[in-house]
Length: 493
Image 1 (cartoon, rainbow, N blue to C red):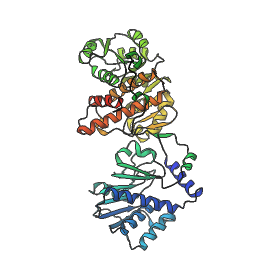
Image 2: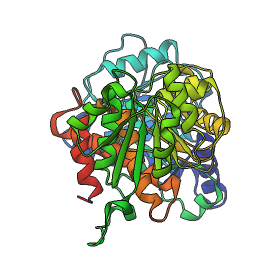
Image 3: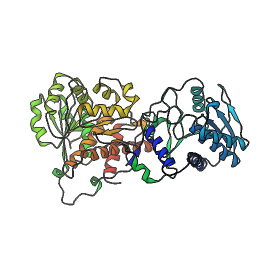
Image 4: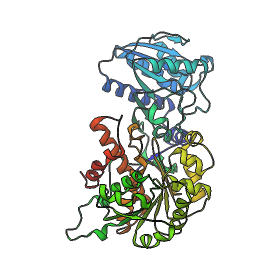
């Protein structure tokens, strides 16, 4: 896993490089500019015209040096300035002076400025932004986003909060973001997923030892799967060795959610799946998927023998919030076995909060808002803070779904790098619950490490979504489209 940093931690790494290693700030600035210019030319070698938008801080300083490099390479370069240039100082001032000495002039950006570019460099606002962008800054960002040019963000797209990934009023939507020294956590979740494009990281040559001095509690998962569950099974294995999942849900007329969760659990490799659902449609589940052991249950008491035989329970898909649903809910939450709560399982919990270390929550922002007596919009303003508050209130392990899904059990926050907008469709959460149930059920039978296997399940689901989208596009992607890819991936293919 790769450490992610807050803006303050990134600035501390920068300070350590300067003060402990004796690397001049201007040297780091030149390395950042050279790195950015190298990547933009590697990606778009046919580029002829570059427009650079600069602020007055060090982010703007990077932009000035990029403009110099582009000019020296024979490209047509225009530099637009925002902010009070009279307040400029330090390395940024040095960079501007050096750029102007090469004959490049600065144009003050005004609303309606016209520019013709193959590539736009966004070097306006860095990682220190805390307020909504307004006025001229907002206008410049809108102009960049309306342009047909490719956009390169220097360190972070202007207008994006480095810690939360929340767009502050307006934010640049980049094709690539070249970020330096420390990967900022906000680039990988919330609006960061929409604004950054491809993220390219460069340490700018600072020693690895400096990173040991900064304690980051946030990690980016690898984009490839790694787990003992990927190994081929022993030739003499049998279904009881691969775990038994019980799924509780499916109110009257709501059998689809439990069916998708059950199939996903089976496709994830678990040996047995039972469904406890409303009697009116229990038999129809067997008709569509005969491998599922479907049971009609009238009351919570009907669940006791099913809970006893299961290794993992999933509670909530299609459950509803009726008296029947609440009766089942009250029975299931007494178990000490691993318990995955989703959908109405979360909504019922929100109305009567309790704590249990063995459960796994999988809320989307709306459900997370209800868990915290808040709103989806408040959750999205700071997903890192929200997941910590949920885990503190309920304990257990929380999976906060969305762009850049977060996973947290009270230790480190883990960020999933995979997934795509096509997965914002009905049933995706049910499939995720089934995948998690199937993975954890198998892990219970082996070396059980809950957080590692939750993270593995989240990544497996996200990569399956990406593979399905690659086949036929994101729009129209169905939850069930993931199932063959889940099977392929769990077999290490």
